[in-house]
Length: 43
Image (cartoon, rainbow, N blue to C red; front, side):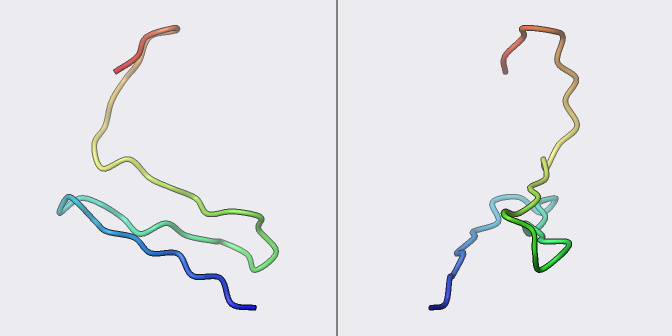
């Protein structure tokens, strides 16, 4: 069985999700912009 992850980068600053190790259960994702949130704040 082969798993496929399809990704569409929507920003020039976007990064592809990464798996650092083959044994990782999921992918690391990244924000395309720097945002500072206070506790309980949503954006």
